[in-house]
Image (cartoon, rainbow, N blue to C red; front, side):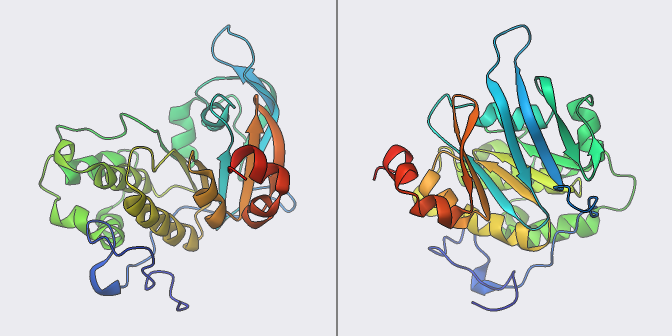
Length: 273
């Protein structure tokens, strides 16, 4: 490993994702700033809530991430993992608790307003415009920008070289892993302060999963906080600076990825022993 976060290509060197020859990509810059001392950069604090008038799915759930960190949310099916992320993005009612971004209470803001504040969100499904080209998808990510975004697009092409090669191809013709790159790239086009990924490796092969995780690590090294929901718990914990295990919408375990991997109860209950 080198000190350059964009030089190391780990995993299986699948050329549809990784940079040929281990080339150096420029950091994808963000509009990030520093939160107030002692306050996490992004936190959903003691969130309780659910969808519409339905029952509560989250129960005093707390999730936080700091600049440069990868924080992952894992747990069994139906544990409220994606619900917690959607609550932080404003897609459901938080009946008690609050969401803070960079020291500002954004609990009452709509998802659209949160994007303007600096939240980049990549949903698990329906996360690209299939009839548009790769480049048009990326341009859609710059819809809130009023500056020249060509440098950002060049950085994304450097991070995901296959997207440059296929930039004029309809995104719907890409492989599953390549589509995920388009979705992540489009979110990065907003120059987010924080990037939120809902199951980014869903439906991709283990080979592609490893390479997507490598690219996620590279983005985090530029200083952008990353909050990720992931079903592949063991692999996610291996790259996590901070991790949350949810059970029935509540915090069951919290710690670093290494701590939770070494936790006998977590291993027995969620990692197959």
